[in-house]
Image (cartoon, rainbow over all chains, first blue to last red; front, side):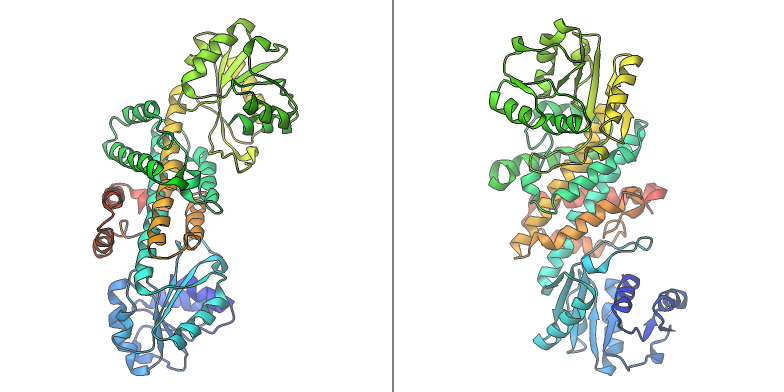
Length: 250
Length: 250
């Protein structure tokens, strides 16, 4: 996260003054790419900056925020699951800068298309962070801490769980000597479809047709895959239920 | 399916002689687009053709195949879940022509990227169908009936279930006054990531990190969403389990 964000700031013409990490090597790698100074001790902090960005594991955000309080600067974290209060408890000038995207070390991402969810401890700070966010992304949203937690949860359903299911499909193929390559166009098209439709409106498959014969055959085929069998039954039931209650799912 | 396939054949320079449907209007719409004659009675069948394509509901494939037997032509069906035997029982010149894609009436699809799974009742027919498939798609696979059924099942995991989960995420957002638009880039990136990686290698989220604190918070937030809660627990457990046993999932 820190790496992607720092690169995006740098590309938009901002200056990264310093990069701190307990691990000097981590910090150095990131700092090198954006032309910043590397430190592994917060006593070496240069406070000639407008903003501190805390991009660390959720459970140490508060610890770092507390140490930065003395500088009286604007401080943001980048976590979906953490309340702004984690910073605001120590510093009134607090905010959140949450990129809603799945970031990999191995894959560059075009930050202009990454939704940035902004929260500030007052209107002035929110405006300031929104303006900053707009320099790196075309998709800037104001989102409060409660909403952001819901987004973070929704992202598990929209990203982490679908990826798990891609893996389940890949393994079913592998067991029958078929290559995952065969499924890749289908996976991409499924994601592309909901770019301009609502998911309920483009649901396909045996469950939405209530095709009991096919579902029974699939469950039989999953005979020795007990976890996948339970997942198949549960998700199919929910699709059938949705389709019976939700008019847009038809 | 019939509409997309007929258009792809036509675009590749093949001639669609006739389109049959019990519903004359259905047949006429499809036939109009590809310049074919429309019939709603199989007695009007023109047998001056090389191939009959049966693209109907799975449970009537056999009925149609039986009626076409007298013409002694090559007959294929386009179903993922149906054995080639459904045709071969009546006609030795049988095959399957299964496009592995999610097709919508409202959205055109570039057939060159649609995987076509081919099976023939003998080597000569398989070769003939493979050559035909290659005129409309760059992704042609030879797949036997057992493998094709597995593909069809895997497609439920790779397409139908992820789409259901997109819908679950959309509804979580809607309940908190947020727009599905916010999640669309994440959904697309998740599908794009597995275009050149294996799903296990790019799994992200609280479960793969075994982040118990976040998972507990998410389950609490799902308090009144009993179905989503069960789905969340089940899929998270499976991700944790995979990550502990599968070296490529790390």
